[in-house]
Structure formats: C-alpha cells, structure tokens
Length: 145
Image (cartoon, rainbow, N blue to C red; front, side):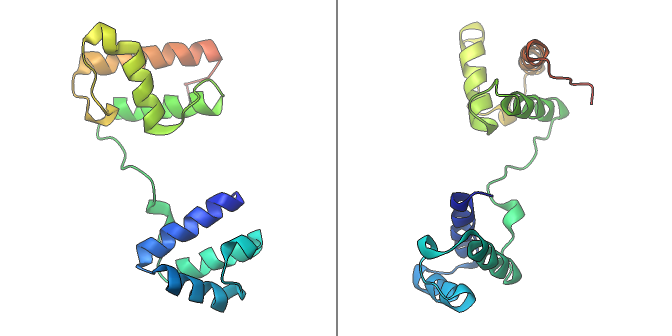
C-alpha cells in the first residue's frame, strides 16, 4: 500500500471511529511518538493503522459498493476490472464503467441510467455485456475463468 493510501486509510479510520483531529494526533503520539503523519515512516503509518483496527476500525468495508443484485451486472463489473487491469480501460471502478456506458450507448438508447447498478432493462444490460465481452476479446482477456 502506498504512503498516500496509508494516510487515507488512517483518516477514514479516524472518521469511522469518531476521532477528531486533535484526538487522532494524540493517538499518533501514543502509538509512534509523532503527531504528524508527514513525519512518519511507512512502517509507522502501518502501525498506526493496525492500532486503529485494534480499536474497532473496519477497513474492508470502506469505499466499497455493495455487489450488484443481478449476476449479469456483476459480470459487467468483473469485465471492467479486467479491462482496467489490462490497461485498456483508463478509469477504474463504477465511475469508469458508467462513463463507458454513457459514451457507448447514449445515442443508441436516447437515455442512459446514471449508474449501471440501477439498470433493469435486460436488453440494455445484454448490450453492455456484449460490448464488454467484445472489448475483452480484442484485448486478449480470457473470460472463461
């Protein structure tokens, strides 16, 4: 995990635990002896994050959307992640996937849902699945797994 991501994690943990800035600085002093995260090494930042997890911070739930209810939409998310990992899709996550759907289908459909997870028209979802499968095939991504 990068230094910046560790700092973000600590800020998220403080917010989740209801710790204000002054209390977080006190915690930092107690755990690593430094009040400023800018002065900490990566190992000290990890130690601080570990202490916050010991205090009840649940890092896993932060920043993640619940999985889509429909399997075909979850498959779209998986294909988008694979495209992003392959370097073909430039914007990761639902934000990028939603932008792709808007760019690819807005003229054809006349309107596009704001978020793929709210889509209910099976024909539109099928169009998205087929477009992503074609793109994966062009990029040499194996979807048989």
